[in-house]
Length: 528
Image (cartoon, rainbow, N blue to C red; front, side, top):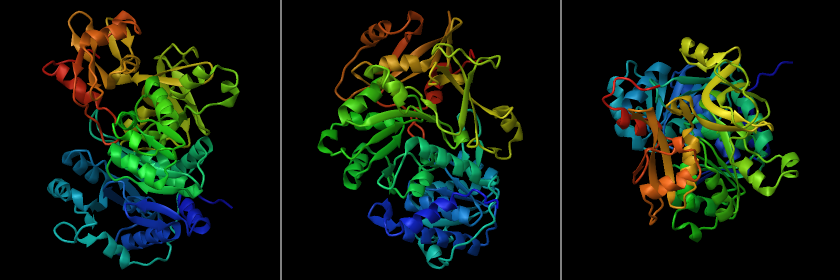
């Protein structure tokens, strides 16, 4: 008998076998898996009580909260599509997403009332608005707890189409309007299984949700942690001290985050005052991490640190730099450490190629750069209501990621850049990531971004935007000399600009497009 794949099985498994265990912690609220599952049933029934129909899109504008974690299962139990919104987008972009998704209900945390008030006049339709942790009134026709309190705890049993859309995530729109990444139950289910095989989470794991859950399930964590009976701990707003306090209080075992988050913790003056010994693994993704950061995390916090890679379009995890004993037993320890800072090798269920401009596979020599292509059951259905964009991204069954990388003879990839971030200086291709890694190795540097700036002689040249560690000093002359020892001369940044901070998106990723734009302002054409 054919049984359709559904992530609702993960929740039901947790409720059946870990029912009395605390599964979700949000501030002072603790929920057992059984109590949390009942709340997801209430949410599913409440959505139907509101008059919504199977297939309708339900949007959430909130932090990492227990309500959003409930939505990951309750909305799907209602047979509807979950659409978590990036809270750092502009009101214009959010209004576009709600209209494009044709959302029938919008759940928002009370803190975002001004944002919702600004969005409402821009909408062409009128969704139902539900406020969380606030008072009914104004735009908010309903309040979340009252809505759940008036609904049944009886489970619903929707007709599951494993290939139908279950979740809808919109890209940040850095190169145009946001695009909706449509993910199916099949995508979500098989990604969870494949990620679990690679990461080996179990019931003793305690995971702090640092990556926002509007960012591709916060790396798919709501699914595989629930499946294995681990504990979810919600972090509503990132702050280094709050993160360390949560790790210490809840004995967190694993953290997933972007380099900027781990950098902030690593260099925080209060870190020695917090017990972080419960941590077993740090998984760094979202943007390339320097080998210096990986080494520092392992040496100073005493925990394994590995790099991972994924995209919204791949649900998300594609590769992990998990050690392979067949290699670590045959290679010197320093080589194993280097591998953990690479982009990694494909997780089970994922095929990966790196191809040149003609579509031919690059040499597996760790030198030739090409574009990463991915084929997997975790690759999205497509971009919602955008068939042309979908046909450009997915060709002959392979997702073209736009990420440029090398491949070595053991199958490890190393991302060198997004295709749009490659700097072409006088015909020479420069990986901004290579330059950033060289600069990040300087002991005074906290964060760095390298972007292309116009150059009269060479077309464009690299420039570096640098944030120094608190109390540290370094001059442009010193950093240039540091780079000249590590890079070919044509890769050394033409200029160094020192900043107090670098702009970041909703996940903590540095916004290179925003940093690059001032250098090109007033010019009619970019070089590439």
